[in-house]
Image 1 (tube, one colour):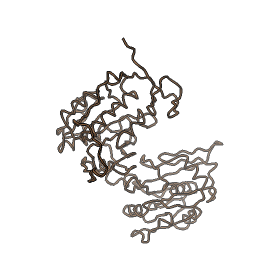
Image 2 (tube, helix red, strand yellow):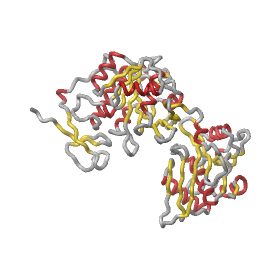
Image 3 (cartoon, one colour):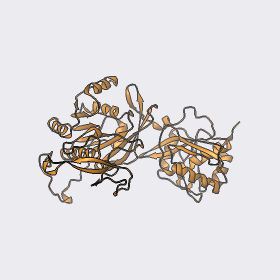
Image 4 (spheres, helix red, strand yellow):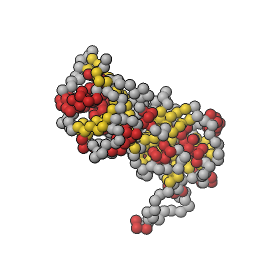
Amino acid sequence: MKKPQRAFACTQCGAQHAKWSGQCSACEAWNSLTEEVVADAASSPRFQHYAGKAQEVTSLRDVSVENTPRTSSGMQELDRVLGGGLVAGSVILIGGDPGIGKSTLLLQALSLLSAKQAVLYVSGEESLQQISLRASRLELSAGDIQLFAETQVETILEKTKQLKPRLLVIDSIQTMHTQLLQSAPGSVGQVRDSAAQFVRFAKQTNTTLFLVGHVTKDGALAGPRVLEHMVDTVLYFEGERSGRLRLLRSIKNRFGAVNELGVFAMSGEGLREVTNPSAIFLSNTREKLPGSIIMATWEGTRPLLVEVQALVDQSNSGNPRRVTVGLEQNRLAMLLAVLNRHAGVACFDQDVFVNAVGGVRIVETAADLPLLIAVMSSLRQWCLPPDLLAFGEVGLAGEIRPVQNGQERLKEAAKQGFKFAIIPKANCPKKAPAGMQVMGIQRLSEVMDLLRERVVEPKN
């Protein structure tokens, strides 16, 4: 009997090696090579054209440029993240921590879509009874949702060709395996080849495909990195499982804006859309407290008001701590150095803790100015007014740089009842929103005087 061929594949990039080594020569990752069995090419099935015919070479001028039609999922926040709705033939990869609500979200979407088009839910982790119990618990309309419990790719595609659904959900891609390989499900080769067959099927038959992916302990999607390159859209489901809020973020989208954010609230009846996320992220009390300020961040195509809190305390060690939740820790250390050099506020002997309330993750530089204002407020025990807003980028020379979409951020703040705004001077509008006083600054040194003279109150 012929001995099966074996190779070593990198779990980070998918590169194959003839023998094991401590480091991948392609991506230079350490201890990332795993052994897998490679099937003989002569025994592999021939390439299959699921649409019934092979694709032909077409000139660019002959390709139709009509707008791609979209189908609403029935959930406004999901449509926003997808760029306006579902596109026929698109492949969407959604990842998140276990129990965060990925399957619940897709089951709710299928329940709404099943009344308009044929849908198929393929489960490789749960039995049909478990899915039915979840649907009953969420009080979902069963409609015409087709369920199929299977893990072999070839069997799933054969059944899908018979049913011809317009929407296919694979939950999850790490449980699937193809007969082309002899390695175990979840290995690099199985995930890569299984996803490739599903993607080829979706493109050739114009079937919208959802792939559910597991994540590692670092929060990245498990499996080879090439998996994210193969799909059209990559979504991450974020949030604390003990909390109510769930954030659906778009990392890659060929049919819409990236970094778009959808906000959901987990309840006993499943996920509910949050139509006004700014009000959710703001404190209900809105008291005058030191170390707290509201900033306007930009997520995808809309502004979002988020509360930023800072706590500055005397350090008892020779190495003061710099801790951030929802913001970048290295940027905090850099901004504290700028604050010391250009505003005369030293924190070298203070522990600094910064938090973005609500579990939201802020990645843009517009958080620089409100972060430093919150640090100064906590250090000096200044109570900032609850109707004060700030945004702006801070440079290493102490200058306040403008950010994009400043006018839209101010309009959102005025809608929420804010009356003061400290922003970069270059972002100052010709006409401020009604009822709002806009204060533009150019240097970080101006912030101290502005806060002391106009808006701050000492803590009693």
